[in-house]
Length: 82
Image 1 (cartoon, rainbow, N blue to C red):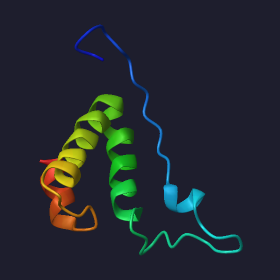
Image 2 (image 1 turned 30 degrees about the horizontal axis):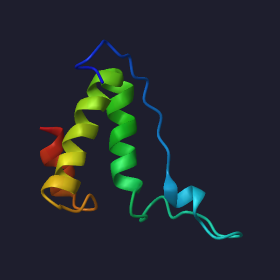
Image 3 (image 1 turned 90 degrees about the vertical axis):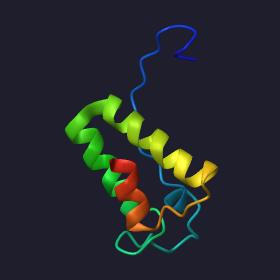
């Protein structure tokens, strides 16, 4: 869409593990599947704003859906940050 006309995006984090958890259970924020990448995304948004978040989100999306890498791997997150 940004290629067609300027669009301003304000990112918010959303955890499907939290939404889909069974009643009476808690998400394991220390060892959960999405916890590490969510923490990194939150830090990047805080430090670099929506533009930094957008760039990292794009890099993580390519890692996951183009190269079929797992986002649980710290090396994948580190590579996306570079």
